[in-house]
Length: 190
Image (cartoon, rainbow, N blue to C red; front, side, top):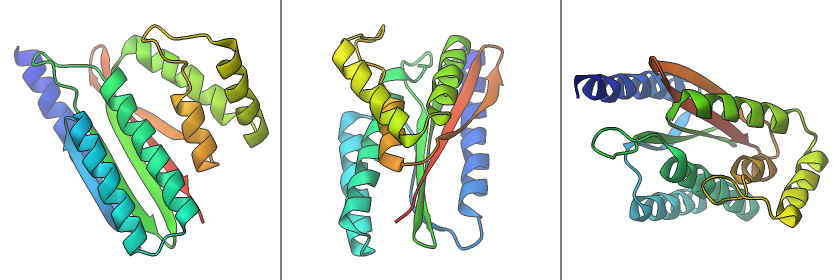
């Protein structure tokens, strides 16, 4: 139990460090930030709040739709795949900032060693594809009907790459001997 308390403390510290780096960028305007658990109700509320903020900022409708899709996909990833602590909680974060009409989303959660390897391989594969190759891969996976261990098609990150039209930056920060804090950043331009 002491190890789990340390993990919770370490994850909170990691989030604080990520938040500082993220929000202190020159010219950055932090639109949204949350650290903790993500219930379905909270995911819905954050998504609706983001849509309202972007409309208030007169962001183009297509950009708002793309951002909304990325937000939903990223937060569902935390809910479905994030590691749980001894209290059966999944801790994660979302932060969104705007700099000069570009929006950057940072999403993260705790993962185990096996997930780190799978995520690294999958994201490197996607990041090395052209936009057209990502589209073709998406269609191929859909038509093959292959599902993952958790019942999905494994298209979450492919969807993120398609909607963002950019690479997915990612990093793993050591939490303890077999857990890492996974952070991904996605930037959308108008």
